[in-house]
Length: 167
Image 1: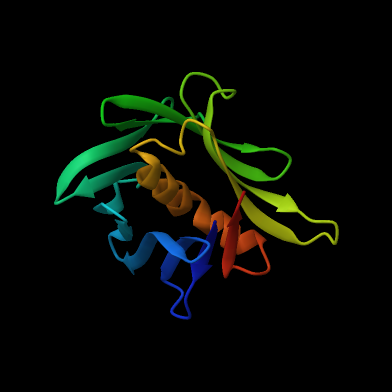
Image 2: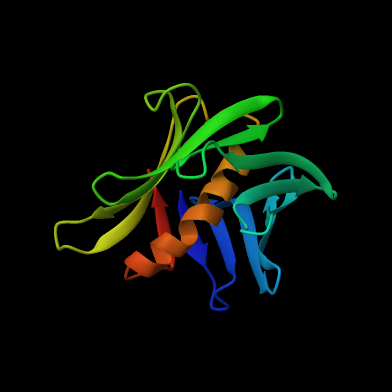
């Protein structure tokens, strides 16, 4: 799987071989960043709320279906509540920047997205899908919110922002 960016710089497509898995269009305005997402079976919007723009919402037809919250104001650990499930996510250095989504502990990995250096010292972005996420109904939401959060980090730290490789 691979994220591809078009020439506009605001549209991304997640492809598995030639099949489109997810499309994301980013809108930048005075209210912040909004991403309109289209998966094979779902259409939804990701946006921020609150004064500090620290909480992220996922909406389908203007109805909030998921929301993030920071566990403690000084913590790198946050919780995503979606479809009655609580999924934790954390930003960490491993040794480069990485975001990890998990259920109970970091060993129960659902999804991770991080930077990795190749043998030439070039940085690339790699996503790892956990076994339990592949057939999960929240798969498109997690892939989209992961890219929504991690895209600025990936663009700042990689040479080629046209592709995001998913292993």
